[in-house]
Length: 164
Image (cartoon, rainbow, N blue to C red; front, top):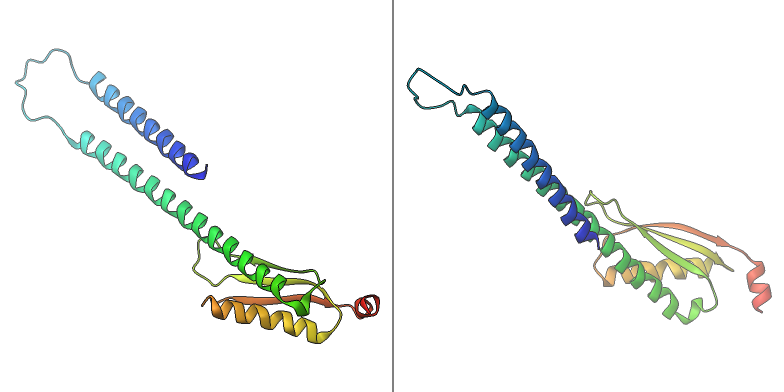
């Protein structure tokens, strides 16, 4: 669906460029005299060169826009995949069973900076929090992915009393 949007944008820009070139050409043709007593020599091609340059510049700008959009989409897809991997690793661990811990991955779309992994939720002890963080570190090391981990896990001792 996103590619169709980029393709549609490219087609609209192409049609607009064609309309601008056609309008400029029409205006250039309209300004030429219909009868001339002077012999016709090589015409002035500067207008044509400017129009061709304008169309080439427009195509380059459109191409750059599509490339940036594709890079953004790729970074978001990688972040979603990483988030799924980390969440699955937290769910697989029996020491964290029954705890609600969420690993959310944030990326900057156009920069090549490492993703930010935000671990949030509540655990009964400091050891459980450290265990969850060590699972995230081990999983990112296994995936060979450099990340920044932000700890937003709250320690709620009453959770241990209710569970026990």
